[in-house]
Length: 391
Image (tube, rainbow, N blue to C red; front, top):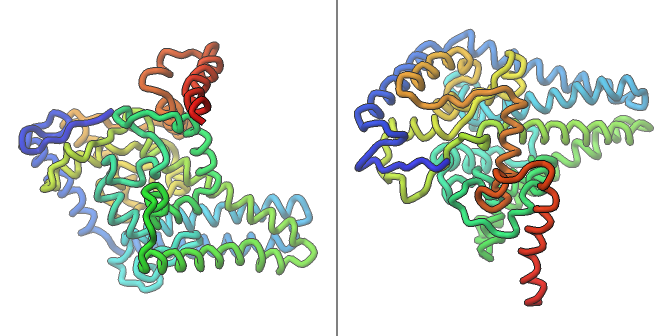
């Protein structure tokens, strides 16, 4: 779905310029109410969560000292996985967005926080906060859109290499934190464009390698060594926790950005003088939510409220569930689609889109399960044969 944005003549999604301005004011009012009401309750929430996450991690690592016992391994691995998910999603992601900077607590501040992730916080903030949230879902501007390796819109030219897109997406999910680190360094663009690295870029790579080295040493050398004879099972527990955390965070991001019905935008359709209201509408159309219980919202870092997060990235994450009904009312008032479904449905939709766009436009829509495999083989044969003949 590609939405035309021509602010000088018409507004996004068929809204008039007056509608867009009114929509912007309504959302600004919601945001200001939250800003004005932040206080002790919110501060207690994040401090309590940080304390709980650290206790869970310490307790899990202590249990893993006896990880040769199956019960200890399962309990320790489950606890460590939970700790890593909380650190990555509800704490790290949101602290680095500056959601808690208003507390002026140097221990929970975007300028001092470092997370249990291989990508350095400063590099992630530049790529995510400064680029992704500014140019959300704009093809060629938002590198989060397919991470530079996937075809994410019908308007993009299909090429035979896109046949491997589902496999690449699965591999990316398994090593998600390393993919994010490379993505934050713009390594894909340098390799694709055959660009040499500037001294500044080389310095950034060294910083990232040092961070990755510390993470690998911590999880796969120090903690296993502390387990003595149990080092093998502790190492396996750390590897499992990292893998599950990667698969989980990748799925959450997929649900918020890639399901069917989420809009993408062309660069030449965007006015360089985009108004606040126009930016709001682009975020609203370019995001999707996950429905479910409060526990799910916590484990997703409240990115289950991706729409609210993209509209208000600097508001405390615990407030998204409170303002979501009001945001949904704004959608209804201006007759905009509010994309919210269960996680199973959103994940399925996102993977369907990955598969669909790995093929030429409209090809999968004409395919059923009975003839999918033979047609894939035929397509691969027809696209690869010329290359073999040329060689």
